[in-house]
Structure formats: C-alpha cells, structure tokens
Amino acid sequence: MDHSYFQSLIMTPPLAIPSKSRAVAASISPASSQTLHDRLHKRDSITAIRQPKVLHPVDNEDLKLLILENISQDAVRAFQAQGFHVDHYKKALSEDELVDKISQYHAIGIRSKTKITERVIKAAHKLLVIGCFCIGTNQVDLVTAAKAGIPVFNSPFSNSRSVAELVVSEMIALSRQLVERSHEMRQGIWNKQSKGCWEVRGKTLGIVGYGHIGSQLSVLAEALGMRVIFYDVINIMPLGSARQVNNLPTLLAEADFVTLHVPELPETINMIGSQELAQMKMGSYLINNARGRVVDIPALIESLQSNHLAGAAIDVYPQEPGSNGAPFDDQVNAWSSTLRSLPNVILTPHIGGSTEEAQRMIGEEVSLALSRYLNYGSTLGAVNFPEVDLRAITAEQPNHVRVCHVHSNQPGVLKQVNEVLSPYNVEKQYSDSKGDVAYLLADIADVSPQDVNKLREMINQTSANILTRLLA
Image (cartoon, rainbow, N blue to C red; front, top):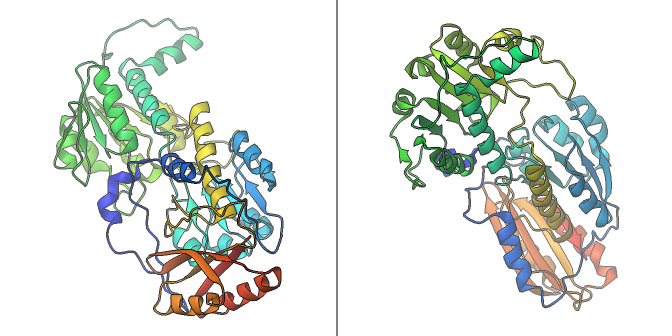
C-alpha cells in the first residue's frame, strides 16, 4: 500500500478527538525523498567522531518488548543485543489476548493482522512505543496512541519492490492463464491452448496511486514493453514514459490491467465497486495488493461471472484469518467460497511484502526506529507524532540527563518546563507539535543522581503533561 496516494488529504487540518481533559490529533507524515535509514545515517555520521552514550531510563526498569506475527529474527536479535527482554510469537493475538498481556510491556511490534485498539492502549499502562513492521498503520488507533504519548513507527519503503514484482508476476500469470493450466496439470489433464492468452507487451497498465510501489511498478512495466498510465489525487512527475490521467474513469476505460496501490481511508473504501468495474474495458484484469476494503468483492465476483473481466488477482481481503493454517472460508468472508471457485482468479494470503529481502529490511528499519526512541527519545519517522531529534549525548558527558516530555499542545507549557529546568544548564533543546500533541527533548548538564527523581516528578506535575521520561 502507498501512503503518498493521499498526500493532499494528509495536508488537511488534523482530526481532533474529544477527551474530558484534552484532544489529540494524528495524521500520516508526508513522504520524504529520503528514507529513514538515510536520515539517521546522516545524523549518526555527525556524531561518529565522538562516541554516543547509550542512555537508559532513570528508573532502571528492564524494558520488555512483545514481538508478534513472526517478525524477522534479525529484529529480535537486534533488540536482545541491546539488553531488551523480548517475547516473540509467530501469530497475531486477539484483542482479548492483547488486553491480558500488554500491561507488562514497554514496546510492541506487529504486522498487519494484530489490531491495537483503544481498548488495548488503555490496558497498556507501561507501553511507550508501537512498531508496525509493514507499510500500513490502519491496524493501530493512531489518535488514541498519540493521546497516550505513544509514537507509532512503520516501514513505508522497504517492501515496495517486493509488491511491485508480485504485480508483474500476476499480470503475466493472468494474461497466460497460468493458474488454470497448472491446476489442470496437477489433476492429470493436458490442455494446451492459446485462446484468451496474451503477451503483456503493448498492453496498457493503469496504476491507481503513484507512490513508492506504483512508481517502481511503472518502471518495471515499461521494461516489459507496456504502456503506463496512472491516476493520483496530486500531480506527480512521471517516471519514464508514464502518463498521468485526470480522473479514475479515464484510467479504467483505457487500461488492460488496473492495479491498486492506495491506503485504506474513508475516501478509498469500496473505491472500486459496480460502477467502476463497469467502466473497465471488456476482457481487462483487476489486481488489488493494497487494502482489502478498497474493492467491493461481491461486485467483483459479479463482473467476473458475467465475463466482463477476464481475471483478477487479490492479495488482501476485508477480513483475514489470524494465523497460518486457519481456514479461509465463508465464516471469514461470506463470499469466500464463491470467489475461490472462479476461473482465472489468483488468490494469495497477503504476501505482497513477504520476501526474505523485504522482511529483513523492514526488520532493520523498524527495529532501528524503536531502539532510537527507547534509547534516545528520537521520533524521526513516527506517523502520529511530532518528529523530534537531538544529537547524541557523548560518553565524555557524565551527569547529563535527557528529558523526553510529551505534552498537550497549549500555551505556556515551555515556560512551566523551563522554570523546572532553570537551576540546570540546558545544553540543547528542541520541541515540535503535531495537532494537539507536542514533544520536547532537552539535554540537561550537571544533574546529580539525587536530583533526577525530583526533576522528573516536577515535570510530571506540569498541567499539560502526558508522559515524561528521563534518560541518563
């Protein structure tokens, strides 16, 4: 899924959520031309001359991480190497299971199946950070997380190539009816035919959402000799010879293959329904590797049964089983058995980003972001939080304390905090806000061990405090 598809929507004022004492807003950070790796490497290179000091919570409580959904073992080992206690599970946990377990953990890592709801967050008394080891974050209540002072990190780039390559393979498989021929051979039936089988060369690919995945796919498709058009809600410079069209109906009417790469937003739910399917060319193909609710599946079934569409490839579904081996039947989605029975339909279990390369890079990117937040307070790359960072405290700076202060975005907060810090030398300080949440990092020099708990308690008592950590 590509977040850049709705960058223009993201730039609108944030949505405020009512609360008894305050309101919090969260939105998705606009995409950057630099990856999180690039941004962190640039900052780390500046401090490479002076060895950064590894910071720890002043209360010395061992940090416990809950890692679910068979996330890369490289990420697990990276956390363990830093001294974190890690509980690793191969499957997703239900809401009830999470509510039962989450109170003992300071961080959680998930993929797409685990749902971090408001109920889960309210039960997570120690939770400091959430890591989504995938592109999407719609499985997390971002607003409630921000309200609780919990940043959410994801990996918006790392599996883009894997998804793009899957789309290419699906286009070829659909146009050559490979799934049907393979199934017949496994049944012992020899059925060599060319009717209804096509080359992709010279065909038109229509990409809905020209972000990280869509743009990579555009290049791959042109290398196969395809003509590429795309639709996005913002004007984007095309790569190669791709051409942007003004609206979705134009794309649907021209494309031989339509592939979707958009996030799940209110504006994209069922964006491909009966009307849109009727606008597609007779004998064309639909591919959805974005989000399950973007396509009206019953309407797609009707279009396939009427032979208006020649085939489809679906990797994501409105409801998905929680673990491998679980049935994908009508109890999961009422139309599952009908969809499974249709010819020239490729069904895959949400494997768009499931390659060794993608999972390794996702594990590296998200584990790095979580570690930097837990160890240094950095929120670079957070999707629901102000992005704040400071250069590292070095090993040559004893008795330095880093204040990580999440607070409501309201007037007078910095005055209160700076009054608390005024007896000390504030060496560096940076604050930023996002909606109704603000985040302050400050490095304080010459803080005695006796003053640390007093300092934290005084900041906790300020009127706008949401969450305060001290690292030393």
